[in-house]
Image (cartoon, rainbow, N blue to C red; front, side):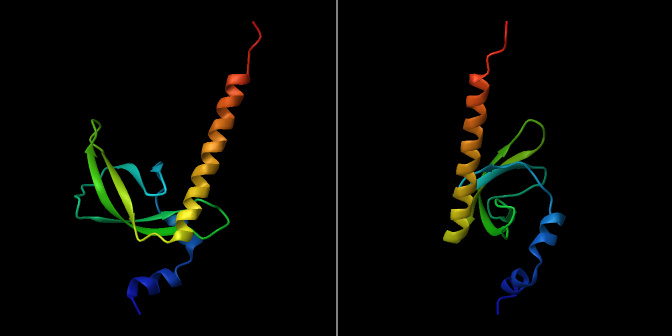
Length: 118
């Protein structure tokens, strides 16, 4: 039995999701990017927990760092690529991304349709 698999199987995902820091990310089905203040290099691995669908278990994935961009505010933007993400988890992400794109398009349409009185 792999120790990390045992840990994953015994973790209460809801409890874990409440204890992990939340941050804004640029999310895709192939990976994600976000700002950090920690020092990393391309050999580092990053474990992420994503909760795209509230009533389902979160996605726990290991990622490879594929790009590191220093920012002017002393932070760093890192781009990650999922390592061995299951097809089921990838489908959850695609569904979430598509629903957010539709939601954004509807908001933009509503803004464009709104014509204030002179």
